Length: 280
Image (tube, rainbow, N blue to C red; front, side):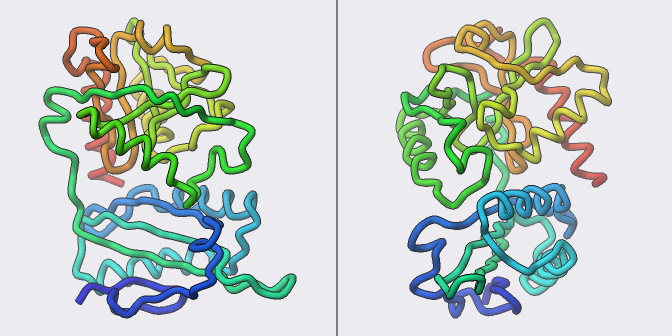
């Protein structure tokens, strides 16, 4: 039977339980990280935990766990489930309400077999749509991977009903922001541009990796405010997260991106990303 790591121990998945009044369950006062492992090693684990801890401090999600403890928990979980290539989810909440200055947080880590995106997504590219919902950079949750994820899931579900792989969000002042579950990059004349963090976007682990890979490969990359005109005028568009890596976008709504096929910069970055994953 599959096991999960809950708070301080491994337990059978069917027996895992959180308190009925857990603040993550009742109010969405929680954070999560989606991670991937290859050969038993979690990609970017340090970056994931750094982001988690920074968000926990910013949102007053109090806990006593450190990087070493969670790293050991992740390793133990993979071993207990006999997993090498896996998809993991780490959830951290404030736990049940307690007296002032008393905390009882919840830490849950799960792992399943890794299921990649279909190969045809990379061979032929995907279509994305635009959502009328707007991202508010002044929202206290902006830029954090919060468990308050319902709006993203609703928009993504609507995109899937339109046979699109992802939906792109804009800010209230019409700046390009991000996807429901991805960061977005544009390519114009061989150079890459991506929305600045000031748009309230998530500082994605894959986003960070793409920026580093582009710099190492001598590909110009700039973070700045972007508009719908930049999006529709791009030669290439791709979206990123640690599961999809670098996913080529060949259509935005009814608009064809570039040649309508995955572009050379996108394909090069995907190759570099796969090589990086294999060695880190």
